Length: 275
Image (cartoon, rainbow, N blue to C red):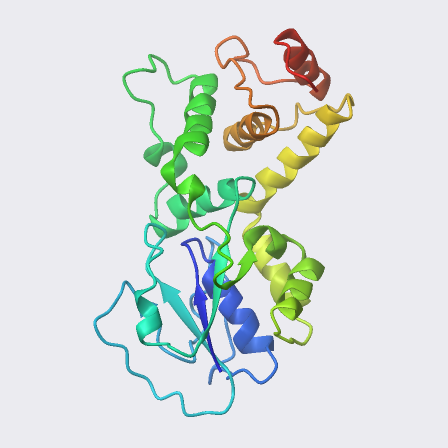
């Protein structure tokens, strides 16, 4: 059986492939089993058992002669969800790695820092509309990027194929259960998952913090959030407020970051937003 791992940019496909080829039952193993996550959280140096299908090549030739399963990476970039690869893998099982509104911030940052090799501040720049470089202005710019970027709505669940949501990869137990639901049995890969989770914490942690903040707001709790000094994380929280309440925080009026979640509740009440 050939498993086509079809994925957006950000290292998710290579990590998924590592799980399959190192821990999947009856999967082909690489000749070299060593790997190391890069400073950016990638596991690209793990040897592939079959060549990557990259950017819709005109030809793809490989001898899939083993009776074991093969994992093949399908990488056309985040902008291309075309299925041209199917003409080379007519009998393969396709697993599409997807994301949703709530996991989009993870993909957005990995797209910039991993795939594009750039930093947030140099890619999401303040233009002539912004007359200052204050923190509140950068926070607004990041929020608008998350809300308005066309790729926010890309790589959605498509029931034509088997799929796995990036959100389910954030918990080891949930990830393992999802693999089982896809008919893929694995041995214990908690160590690999822990390495991936740790090396990618800069991308994963902001949405975990945003979930906590929203839960405190919904339950009318007074939680101290002065510790959240990272501007990207603050913008992800603004984005989550927008997702939950369809309300955009008035950026200039609230130029200072909130000290506690009660202040967010008071703001929402002030503008008549039901909490």
